[in-house]
Length: 88
Image (cartoon, rainbow, N blue to C red):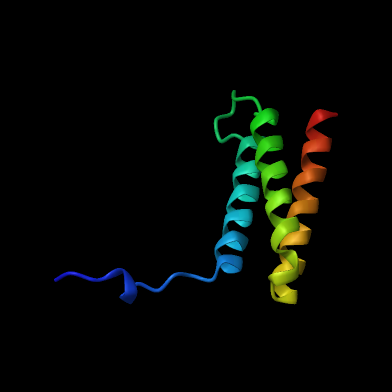
């Protein structure tokens, strides 16, 4: 059975990008806290993920629901602070 492009529902771009921002911030946390006990944090990757998340967030913040905007703001701030702490 074939589905035409007209029948496929595209997610709202603000919701899609909100999820992408959250995913990047979760990834940044994983780069900062590697699971292996002898592994070192990957600050460069964490910083890149947070920078891209911040740029995307700035572009979509006005389109997000207030609760989603607030949650992503907290996540972004926490990720930035975690990087500063890891740098020492």
